[in-house]
Length: 284
Image 1 (cartoon, helix red, strand yellow):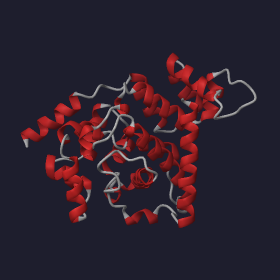
Image 2 (cartoon, helix red, strand yellow):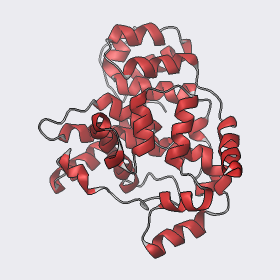
Image 3 (cartoon, helix red, strand yellow):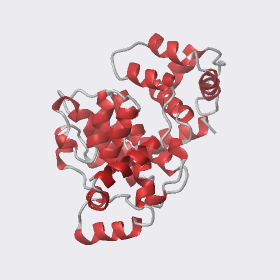
């Protein structure tokens, strides 16, 4: 047990802290807020402001009038885009690193996280009647859901293929394979990192329960199921994180929260590709 704790703590120590402005932004956008609340934070970050203005004036958004103010840029791009770009710029390469323990190349984690975020937000459009879920929280939760993999990666180096074969052979989950080998999994490691990063409770729930959404606190279940589904849609679209792709079961209770008819699934996948293309074009 002590060895397990030391291994996890070593992985956590290797991760740099988030910038104070990003921690503040994630806290503000996780609760009731206004556009002005967001602007007060990001207007102090010159690099983020410049990137947002460049994106708003890119061909992907095709406006006839030049966007020359931060307020106009944020209104045009939307909160999800602002949070996504802030995460990319302020996480010091965290999402771009290769994950050797998952045989995942540099950039795969970011690609998967962005697609999971976009898919989670799109899925919120198909929430059942009386189900309340914040699509912006689903987006941010999608970006953050797999942060624990960066903590586990070094400890799993060289084990990925054996773990994938084991999961395929006994039809278990890759999460169980992680736990069997290390004594903890990427969801638990992710929650530990979320505590270290001082993330809001809703994102701790999304990170900790995205493979076991039925076990999330009742008030967070719609959000966690949206992130759970967003993760699956990202993998279905070809944006996985390596050896574990599609080796997690889809929880059947998702149908209690979202209407994923075959037609809606096709719409989500199509919209996902279109939105992902627009984002990648605007930041190129």
